[in-house]
Length: 368
Ligand SMILES: Cc1ncc(COP(=O)(O)O)c(C=O)c1O
Image 1 (cartoon, rainbow, N blue to C red):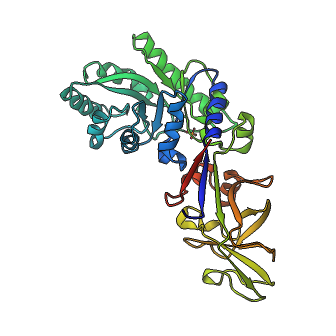
Image 2: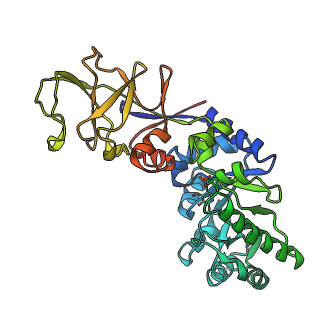
């Protein structure tokens, strides 16, 4: 096995699930495991959730659900992104729950399901202001009424998605929730009920918990992060991924010597430079060159030169490290921790992108 690994702590994953379940005061949690469980590996992560009795898992695309089915998953899987006419057969063949926004597509889905003598369970996605997916809130009731004519679909859910659940300023999220609640009231006034009513992602559970919805779609929190460190601290979440590697070479350099590509780093001192096989081809973004730090024996050292596709270079301050010495790029070592928050701040992005970017060629090592 390569000396670079992403360790996935499944005990922390379950801890985070329980923290969110407690915060949502008993409302169900639908762990979101799209994009290979935000880089953590959707097969093992889904198994860990099923083992503790999780009913419904969320993915983005039908193909992601098919991978789970082919690995033996027989539980409920909801595909968050509304389906298109191109993947209708997958919903039927693999018994997937669909998200609906386009009546013509839903009609085709129903037609295919009838042919197969089945019903596809479907959630109505209501657009309340994100303006990405969903049925316009004003047309929701009419859409639901028209579904009565579709014998191949069973409408079991209704949902919306908040554009700003993480923001302290709740004005816009409250506008969206008001629109959603209005739709829910119209539905119940017309005799339509739903097994699953959902609006909250991780940020929504923390900031807007509301008992009128009975399931929350939680992604990032499952993996120990939120949009901001203060949010995950409030929830008592624990990061799930640790990225470790090993020093494979140490070069002694002198004043004026170059380090790495493009002459971007010329040394102003004698120093030792450790070579570690972790690069942008693994998802360690090149923009972190010269900016990120790693941990060796619990102390921080800077990445210098430009991060290469397969390796990076570390200024180890003339320390006498051995070849094979452990290097931590993400996670805890010797009492210090490099978080996805820290790396995302350096990159000007969000923690979601840090773990999701870690490529398949970095072996995942799972433990409880
Ligand atoms: C529709 C929908 N629901 C839930 C989630 C999960 O959000 P989070 O990871 O912030 O919990 C996402 C993520 O992008 C989403 O698109």
